Length: 413
Image 1 (cartoon, helix red, strand yellow):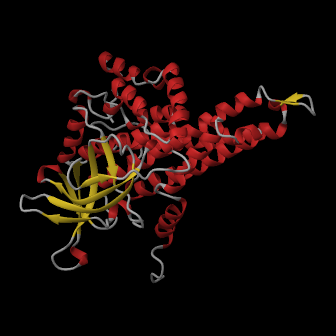
Image 2 (image 1 turned 120 degrees about the vertical axis):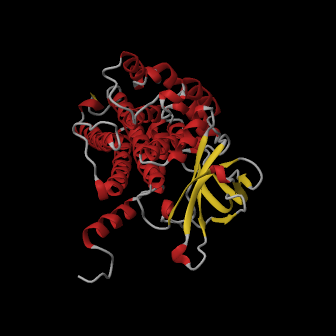
Image 3 (image 1 turned 90 degrees about the horizontal axis):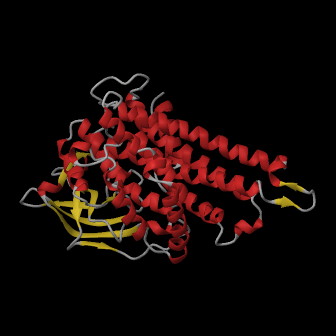
């Protein structure tokens, strides 16, 4: 999310260091891949991966260079996350949430929310952010909350409620979350508060993560019971309901694009593994390698086509978001105006469906041995399905597009 570095040699060197193959070399990815199988089998957190990523400066990817970070753009981070997801999907998904918070802070700061600087300063100091927005049954997500915020005399709030799917539960040190402030008059005057919580009294992470896939993310439930958000930790208050306020806008966009990147990264790895299987697996009956079987060729081709199309969508919208609010106009960039949210959610939904379809094609082309635990394809096929449960899902995207095209249900025509 920084200006074009082409005229600054030092900046060019910094950007070269952010190339996926340099920051995440093959040898490190192979280590991550070996650990991923163990984490999945033992249903435990990715402590060792986190330590390695921290040492690389990965937690400071979005932090501007002048604050001690790597100054990465969103486009660069989508590429890094695709590469990381190909080795360790649950690690990528878990660290995604820290990156969502810090990336959203950059977007919000560009759009005038000065309080977002706090997130970047804390990330620069080594804090690990989790993302505490999801609540059971709350389909409005960022735009409403079941968790309540009781005002304190010092200008802060006490939060009470339950947040689900809180990735990084064993390790986070800061939680960006939201809650509803009851209006003085009626529900129409309700507001939402967004801010930062620290671990401590009133904040409990439950040990309840035992899932089909993405096991190492340890996205446990978080219970808030009068958890104190002091005045200096408040980031923003917003209306209830859809809005384009800087922080929700930044969270929504970065969240959707980085999720899409993780799932397509899984699919790209599945295609790579599927190609390796096809070029070595032989049909005893027909006496040919499976790479020469027209059905196998079609399956792998369909998988690759789906991945390529999704990558192009992710990179276009990420580049456009990088350009939004830039100091100078960026050639070829598009300001999507009122359609930003449709594009954010649409890219995520399409990428997730493309990733699942691609992994399934590879699974179908690879033989019964890859139905067994211990097969990387089998693990990828479980991990990729977590995307079905993360917003925006296909149903909500279709509903949003229908509303944009046709208006509200029951409206006068």
